[in-house]
Image 1 (cartoon, rainbow, N blue to C red):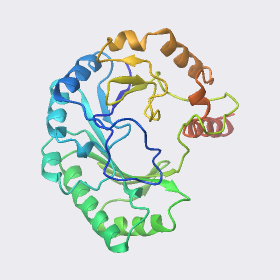
Image 2: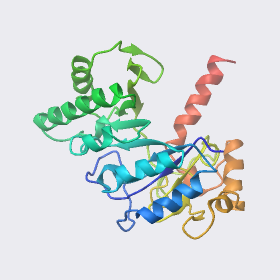
Image 3: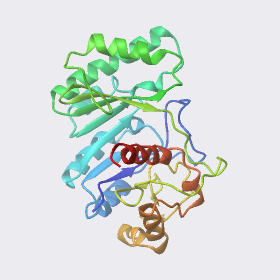
Image 4: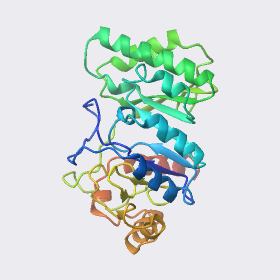
Length: 286
């Protein structure tokens, strides 16, 4: 069993955030039949479904239906969103079976102060209502050093509008039991044109998770925005067969030894997070 699976129900987004790698694939949304096929294949593999790779899941018209389908299949749903459509779809989301919602609050790096305040107000309203219903809500500020001072203003706005204990921890701040603020540095996406590393990589791709693109392509993780490491297509081949293929096993075995078997993985800036974290643990616990 895998801890989670990332599924891209659409690769279409309503924004062009500066921190996002983007992609050059044809715009696509999964159909109801395709999503049903995904669920059928996921059930033996994981209990957690993350609606996240490229694209904004709230742009998919069938999202509430998909959330109900996932619940019926025994899967818990976790949304990752830029937060700009929360107000438009608030009623649907509040009445849907959602385990967790992660909101990239740093999506408004540019724009007017008026637009930023309106955006934050909509996020606060949703966060309060969703967390009160029992959904875990995580507000992400994953752009430390690239925020042009807006992170402090966003933090102060959230601090003054969200009641709670505001207790600091290793990942950010626990506002209350179901509501959290999470810090993070901006990272470099894997890209075949990016500088190649020394081959030493720590990653959990194909160890505790994998990804499925909107056309059914299975990839090792949620960072392969272009589907460079295509392991197979679950609309054509059984997922269990794809995940047990020689290429998939080689990738996973390499990561267990802190080695990247694929060129794209050797060019991944996100993997450096894990390597830095492990080095810090070793220094703390010699």
